[in-house]
Image 1 (cartoon, rainbow, N blue to C red):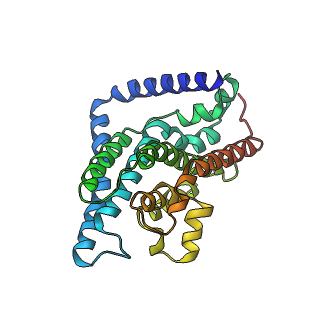
Image 2: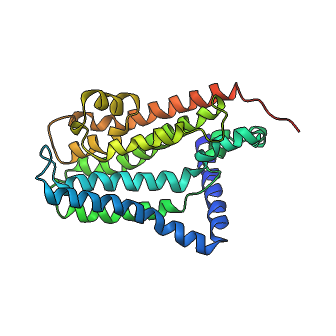
Image 3: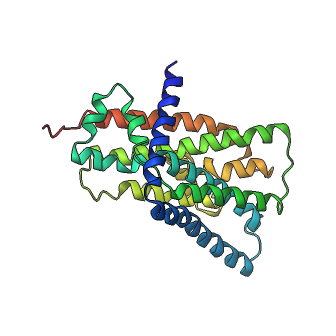
Length: 265
């Protein structure tokens, strides 16, 4: 019952945010295409790189494009549905978090759905298009378990990204500056997920697998889908990692909430 009510409120908040964004149609269109343009620049760099060098450690360009497609799509889902987490520090510093705490609704849900990222739509569209193109240029044996794995991957990867970014934004409870760069730094580390983890040194592999498990949203699922040997057995741990990240993010938020000092009115 509680889960059903949460989903109902989420859809209502999302619908209201869409209405708000559509009031400014020019901004809506600009943001819609800005997400795709930014991701396509990264793809252009990859194509230029692979035009000069052979496959890297057995990974072809289109196999890496498929990883990028997964990253783009899940990043778009998170930005579109949960952009509000990037307003966490503002809510804390201005005391606007007070009204969230007074309502009989989860404050985490209210924060996550406080805003909507229109650019996320462009990211999702770009991800789907690249995924379809990459499928035609790579070889994946589509067994029943791999078909089932795709929706599990999408939901879990989006949950991992959301939980990590939300926890990073909760640093505002401790670092009260309006210009706290810590959340952005954590977000930028997701760039490591765009390429095979084995390209990096062992400390970085450990970091993006255990500390900030970004490898579970791109590289490890790709190893499983392409039936490559290394790390493939970890692929079905993606939902477990997602639940763990959500658990940690929730702890960080409520620990930080203990430090929250309402400005009072």
